[in-house]
Length: 368
Image (cartoon, rainbow, N blue to C red):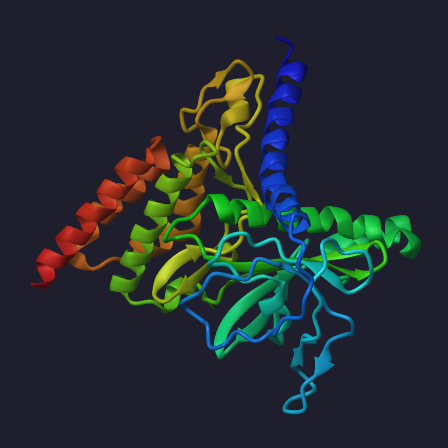
C-alpha cells in the first residue's frame, strides 16, 4: 500500500475513534435529556457533598441567566458563578449550559456554576488553568480563554468577527481531554471531577473541565525517598500507557509541567497531547528517539513500538537523570546501571518497573 495512503488511513481511524469517544460524551447524554419531560427549578448547592457524591437528579441541563458575580469578600481576585438555573433540554440562548456528566460521581453544570473561582495558575497553548473551590475543596478548572496562544493567533488571522470558529477548535481539544480522562483511569492520572458545556454568547460555546488540585513537581527539593517513590509512580504510569485500552500512548509534550503531586503521588494532569499514533517513517533513522538509535525498526512505514520507547527515553531525560543521578551510596551502583541501560538500550516498561522496585528493596534493606 502506498505510504501516503497508509498514513491517511491510520490517521482517519484514530480521528474516528476519538470522535466516537466524544459522541459518547455528547450525543448519549443529550438523548437522555431529551427523553425527560420534567421541567423544574433546582437548588444549585452541593448540600455538603465533597468526597462522597450522591446520585445526581435525572434532569441535567442548566441555565445561567447572568454573568459571574463578584464576591464581596475579595472582589479583586475571586468570582462566583450565578446560581439561577432552569432545566431545559438543549441550550438555545446565551448563558445556557448542558450538563453531560452521566456518571453519578462527576460534577456537572449545577455544581460548577456554584463554584468559587480563584487565581489563574497559568495558561498554555490552548487552555487556561485556574483555581476553584467547592465547599472548601480546592480544584483545578481548565477552559479556553481569549488570552491563550491558539485564540490570540487565530483572532489575528481570522479577525474578531470569526472568533467563534477559533474557540470551536480549542474547545475540541478540551473535549478530547475529557474523553481521555473518562477512558484512562489510573492512580497516576489526575482524576476528572466534572465538566460543563455552555454558551457564553451567540455562537460561542465554552467547556469547563474540573480536576483534582495538585502542587508542581519540584524534584530538586525532594529528599531521596520521595524522589524514589516518584520514580515508581512514573514507571507505573508508563506501563499503563503502554497497555492502555486505546493502544500504546505517547506523551507528546513530555515535561514536568504536565504532572502534579497530589496527596504525595505523582499524577499526569495534562492529557490533550497524548497520541496513539506511532511515528511514520521511510528509513530507520526516522525512528531515532532524541536523535539516538534506540533499536526502533521502521516496518511498513511505521516506527514499531515508538510510543513506548519514546516515553521511557524522555522520562529518563526529564525525571530519572535527576532522581538517580545522586542516589544514596547503598543504591549507587544499581542506580548508575539503570541510567546506563536507559541511555543505550530499549527498555520495556515492565523491566523498568522491576529495576526501580529492586532499587527500592536495596535501599530499604540498607536502611534497616
